[in-house]
Amino acid sequence: MKSSTSIPVISIIGRSGSGKTTLLEKLIPELKRRGYRVGTIKHHAHPGIEIDRPGKDTWRHAHAGSDHVIIAAPDRLVSIRNLRNELELEEISVIMDDVDIILTEGFSRASTPKIEVVRAGRSSEPLDDVLRRIAFATDLNLPSQEPQFSLEDAPGLVDMIEELFLKQDA
Image 1: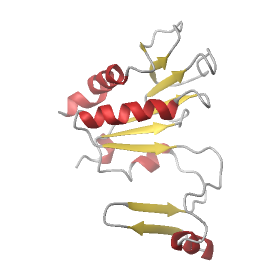
Image 2: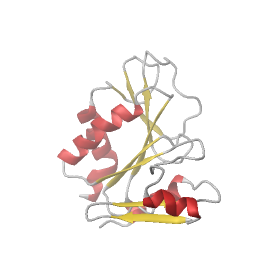
Image 3: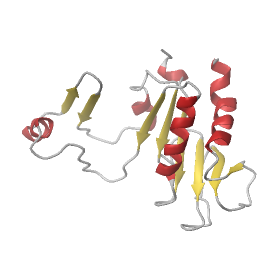
Image 4: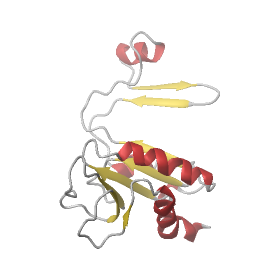
């Protein structure tokens, strides 16, 4: 198992509806096919997410006042924790120490390297003031120095990710 400080974290960013989740659905199996253990973190910008169904035991625990609810099964562990303030991505990623790479959806303001999804159907303009953008996944020809990959080119993106972040650990 790697130390969580050595696990690369790469953020997939873009405007709402640009295809971030769709791109992740392509990157994850390509990384898995190459033998990597992949963790993901989804950023939800608005407070009050509910991932448990009303009436289920964990929902009842949380609504009774539990600050941290964990449900454990033979094949999964789910943790739901109340927070006083939003955690930074770096604080969240240290929890995930059993993977080779962490991909996030969102976290455009984090200090992580970023792949931005730009789709013609949503907006032809990249986000402003993105720090550490390493590439675009796009169906456009953007006036940019960063490498540009087709929205369908998961193998090409994973080649780049391996070269930049994973090969030195091999």
